[in-house]
Length: 125
Image (cartoon, rainbow, N blue to C red; front, side, top):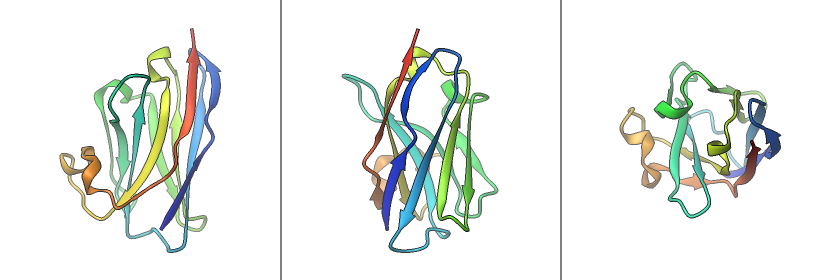
């Protein structure tokens, strides 16, 4: 599975962006998809994830209520909708695909088999 993340950009605080994670090479309907981010000088951190069935999502506390994840099986794409963006959301955002699921496991980078290249999100104050 090859993943391509896109949709990043520069936005003012309070604005919105929608990131896409498109898969090719193999259908990824049987994969959970996680979103991670890495800010300047920081470690990569978990943002949220969606189950392969699409019925469950899970987010880190700092983005709950502001971010949502959805998936379009026909387009083999997962989306991260980010609303009410804050300067601290500035980071490179990565999507990843894996085949394990629990609210503890999906937070770990080592359970994902495939990673996209990242897309920069910059939120100005």
